[in-house]
Amino acid sequence: QVQLVESGGGLVQPGGSLRLSCAASGFTFSSYYMSWYRRAPGNQNEFVARISSGGSPVYVDSVKGRFTISRDNAKNAVYLQMNGLKPEDTAVYYCNTGAARNYWGQGTQVTVSS
Image 1 (cartoon, rainbow, N blue to C red):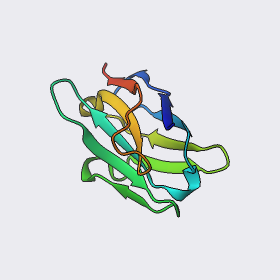
Image 2: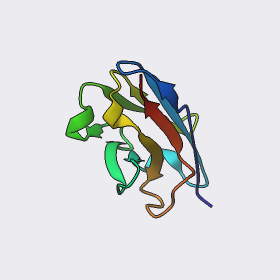
Image 3: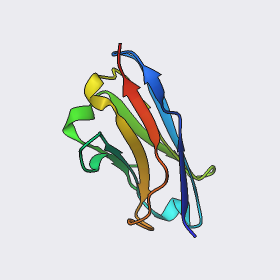
């Protein structure tokens, strides 16, 4: 069965950086796109970034130029490098896969605050 385990969140000051990781299992990782979503308190899930099986990225406008999504098919992992963090980036971040779009892991909390 599909399993996604997010890690790497934490508390960071505005302008700081974090690198999120997502370890995937239970499906043919290299065949599917992978995405990052986030959910701020009181809000619904918001799309952040997606990377195709071939490595092409797509970003929501609010993170373009600050966030970078990447994948390592040998490790069945997807990453989100977040630079220039802002308080409005505070949320629980989740990875998601086209192999099981209704599956969500536990997420990892990112808090941007001084």
